[in-house]
Image 1 (spheres, rainbow, N blue to C red):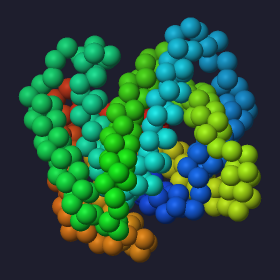
Image 2 (image 1 turned 90 degrees about the horizontal axis):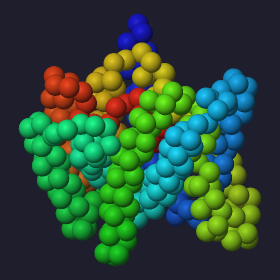
Image 3 (image 1 turned 180 degrees about the vertical axis):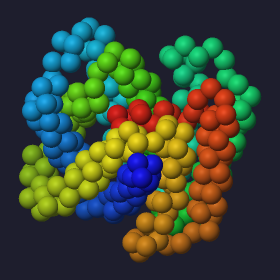
Image 4 (image 1 turned 120 degrees about the vertical axis):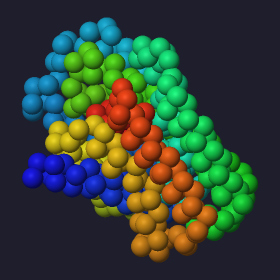
Length: 315
């Protein structure tokens, strides 16, 4: 029963994250990126600061020097992660963006883990997975530039922005995962990290939007902003945490490979994007490669993809 509940919670995370990505992509056509970023993550930071205050988790080892350092790094990677993600889904279809992120995320993690997490060498399985993911990534990029994705054809500049921001998002998420692991090793709780990781993102967003645009965006869309905050961020994060508590890391990694295909299905069901056989093919290739990588790594020394326990902080 506990396993079924865990699977349900992780699947809920995957589904709500996909819903958030698809509908946010459409919403970004109506509102300034930095308005939605500042509002959503101010509300999330406020929620977790109140939560840590109520639970008396705020002290957390007095925020030693190492903790402050890694919380600062978490602010940098978090800002890079979310800003690049929002710009990515504004310029290319969310399923393609999710596929590119899922392609480069384990690829980068494999190589930086050796340097930052004291892993001395890359095994054959990781190397083969990396090459396969690189191939899948190139196929996905070809789908975008060929104009055969599910989104109406745009100019090459828009494609370039969407692809580069997706790849940058994957890289920053990989770095954020490593930083989260460091904070885990310093015994910093997830709620404390969530309370303090959004400050730089909020500051950058506020500095990049003028007063009139901000007031207009909030006044016209405040209900949708609150909805995205709760359904698109808070509930998925809590669902993932509940799933992680009930399942082993490999099972969570397997379920998370469904992210890109879930984005694709939500796109089609929403009617916001046209069906694209090429997009579906790129997603399936990437999903199969990641699935195989997780399966192989589960028989070796740990997940090739990032540890799911870090995904709560990396997203």
